[in-house]
Amino acid sequence: MDSTDFRMGESGPEAAAQGNHAGPSAMRDGYRIAAVVPCHNEEASVAKVVTDLKAAVPGIVVYVYDNLSTDATVEKARAAGAIVRKELAKGKGNVVRRAFADIEADVYLMIDGDDTYEASAAPEMIEALLSGPYDHVLGVRKQDIGGSAYRAGHETGNKVLNGVVGKVFGENVEDMLSGFRVFSRRFVKSFPAVSREFEIETELTVHSLHLRVPRTAVAVGFRDRPAGSESKLRTYHDGFKILALIFGLARHERPVAFYGLFGTLSWIVSVVLTIPIIAQYYESHTVPRFPTLFLACTLLLVGFLAWTAGLILDGIRRSRHEAARLIYLRYEAPEAAPHPAAPIRETQPDPVAGDIR
Image (cartoon, rainbow, N blue to C red; front, side, top):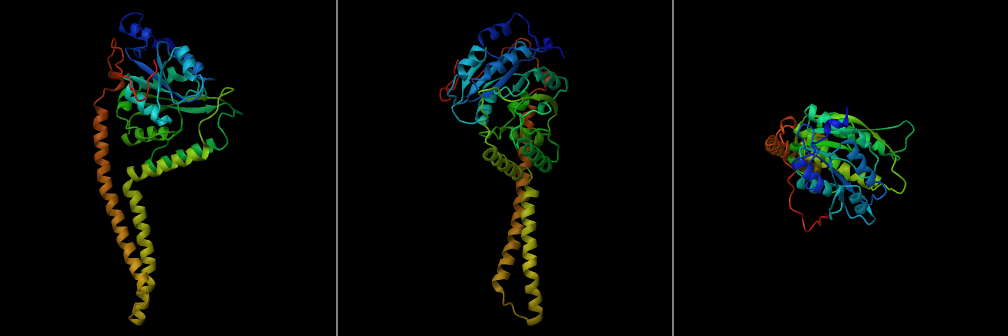
């Protein structure tokens, strides 16, 4: 697709906004497009990410959210033409939470600042979102044969996590940990971001699954980091945090299955403990193993309590989903977002988080 489809007019409020960085003014049939680039010590790559995005989607406004960088990330991003903001709460999840709250646009693009994703795929992803229309377009990473962009164990771990989430939520997930995504406004504004760090990708995926929003995937190039850039992902530490998040999400999103499993296991152990006691009672009319019988009865009650908790929480889950769905439906679908001349409205700078203009 020709990237000129995304060009905006050269006059009017959008042009003024682009000139003074007042907000996203990239237009494709009247759509405002904003890119969010979380960064922590990415001076070696952030400028290229910004320039590549601007070349791929002319007129797009790129927001670089600096997250406690100690190098020249801020200066490099600003020099490349990005709006630079600073988030003092450490973690990618905190950055995304802040950006989604602050920025008002019709289309949101999220990409890492490490230059491992091919920004040239952005027009295709945006076009997919608007043509669907979809609410979530996932960039599925495809590295060249023989490439080494995936660190040892990361590709296998990603596949395992994809399989776990697929089993829990009953839908296939192609690349749950991808950091290159495009969202509609109604997806972003109905997303209750609670993750602090790299679990944010998992949370975004699960949000799209439990709301059952229209979504699709686009293959994107994935390459090695440039020289001088280091990965912030800690393989085992962050992997276990993501697994813990999935465990928690399963508890919240599938409470009957989650608590029912523990309840059923409790019943099985109770029956196994009780059968010998009953058999002995019929033989001798005595209960010499009273502590075991007490344990078996306790486990039986625990099983009932677990099932009861699961059923109650399932009703609460249904109410939460209905409320989230109603919030989601408050916003227009991507194809019905008429903003041909309205520049973005941004929230006031947060003095605590420390905006950089």
